Amino acid sequence: MIKCPRCKQLIDLHSSKCSKCGLKTTQILLASNKEAVKVLKTRRKNENAHIKHIKQIVKPLDEQIKETKKLYKFAENEKEKNALAYKLNDLRIERHNTIAKINRENYEAIYFTTLIPSDISRKKLILYVCLLGCFGAHAFYVGRMWRGIIITALWCVFLIGFFYFQYFTINNEFLVYLFGDIYTMSGAVAVILVVNDLIRILLNKYKIPVKIPPEK
Image (cartoon, rainbow, N blue to C red; front, side, top):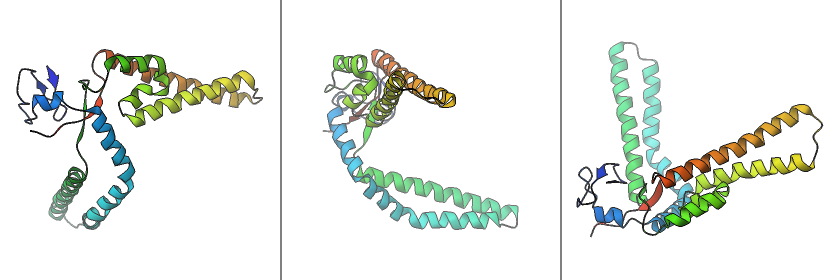
């Protein structure tokens, strides 16, 4: 059994497609992490322009939502309030759907799956998390950049604090406790994140971004 990356439905490997969303089993098995990483890099480069584009498109809806909120606030009776509440809800749904449509049109869909794709080596992934996990090597390897950055930043704070306390003296007792707690906690959180990732990898529960190939 494998989990569909699109709708999270469990699929029998002998089935031809997902019974819920229709994604073919062959597409899931041919999903590529390297292609997903390329798409994510392009996204990051064009993120600001994309956000500006979305803001411009939904601006009229935001103005309508703002105006409806004002009317709701000063509504005189319960009937009018209920009508405005329904209108506000409809506007919010329309805004959400508009943003989702823009994202679909401008971005290739990236899904997260626990099934390790063919272009990722499970042995390498385990090696990276065991040897260089505290620097987020395993996360960078599969393109989970933010997780890798967070782990690296936490570990760097720990190392800076550790070596500073080894070679320098702080006379203020309060600062000693404060910075001591900060760097210790940073190191502890980094280790917890890495151990959690290692366990998830070993249990085949670590989420990896993939791009699903088009249907043939």
